[in-house]
Every structure is written in C-alpha cells, then in structure tokens.
Length: 265
Image (tube, rainbow, N blue to C red):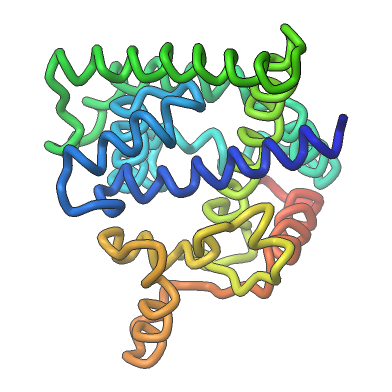
C-alpha cells in the first residue's frame, strides 16, 4: 500500500505543479479557459480554491523574502536549531507535517493579502468565489464515487486520494519550496536553480520546476520554455543573481550543514 500512496501522491503533485502555470495564466491565453482548467481539473481535485491559491502564490512573488510572504513558512531556516532538526522536518513533511500550516495559510491568504500590494488579477467576483467552492466540493464527490466504483471499497477515497494528497503531495511541494527559496548563512543573497537528474525531476521538479530562479526572474514564461530562458540568460550574462546547483540533494546537504554550523542564525 505504501508504494501506491507514494505513486498517487507524486502524480497528484504533478497536477499541482501544472496548476502553478495556471496561477500565472500560462495554460491558455484565454483567462476563462485557463481558470476553468485550473478550477475543475488541477486545483479543485486537491481541495484548493483557485482564488486562494492565486492570491497566495502571486503575493509570494511580490513579497518574496519578506515577512509578508505567506510561503515564508517553507523556507525560513531560523526555526531549525540543528542539521538534525532540518533533516527531521524533511521526513515529517512527507507524512503530513505541513498539512495543517498549509490549510491555515490558504484559509488566511485573503485576510493577509493587503499586507503587500495585491495583484489586480487576484480580484474575484462573487460568482467566481462560488465556482471555486463548487469545484472543490464537486471534485471530491466524483473522485470519491470513482474510487468506490473502481475498487468496491467504501474507504478507497480516504485511502487512495486523501491520504496521498495530505502527506506525499503536500510534503513534496513543501520540500521543493524550501530547497528553492531557503537562504544559508554561507551564501550571498540570491535565487537558486537546479540541473537535477531524472529521478529528482519526477519526484520534486516535474514540468521544469527545477528551472526555478529563472521563473522568478521572468514569471510570464511557461514551463516548456524555461530551459530556453535559462540558456538565454546565461548567454546574455544576466545570470549573476542565480546560483545553479547540481541537485536538490546537494542543496539539502548544504542547508543541513549550515544549520549545524556554530553561530546565530
């Protein structure tokens, strides 16, 4: 059962990463089509209202590195007093350690958004907010029905959908976000990006999420053009603010060693 939970959670995470492009209006040029895909196929099945996801994520881009960034809970390294504490967090994230904080973040994202300048594109009409709610509820109903119909188990929805989503999917997203955005004391302030091997790209960075610093520099570039953007920035000499790592594992080791080093964080 554990391999099934791992695989399903990873594939759910793939949908979530694809939904990231939708938050930036990059899946389709027509906003209504873009948002319909996100609402009904990508975010609704994960129980995430599109409006709350978009407010939170675009505010992350606007307020990155500041106290106003609601994603700071992923990458604030001051909470780890040792390398072992950081490694423990990486493991517990995969078994649901970040589920409650993320739910609270999404619920409170609208309330906290005015702390920084909100993007005009995050404004929603009342019908859109009701559509968000409907997409979440309707998605869970049909997924639960499909799980029951296919397996014959009344508990299949909880075991094969909710459990992977609340552990593996959220955990992979939390770990990736931490490794991409955290700042070690030994580093100069800047952005982090990764080469990554095939295994990492499957579990942590599908759809070129490892080309992450470049995405922060030019958020309007869709996922399939990010490698070309990297090559362009490197050829033009505009890559100075970016640190390129071989892998996420290399980055995790650096951050763990930094947590273990003496001195105040």
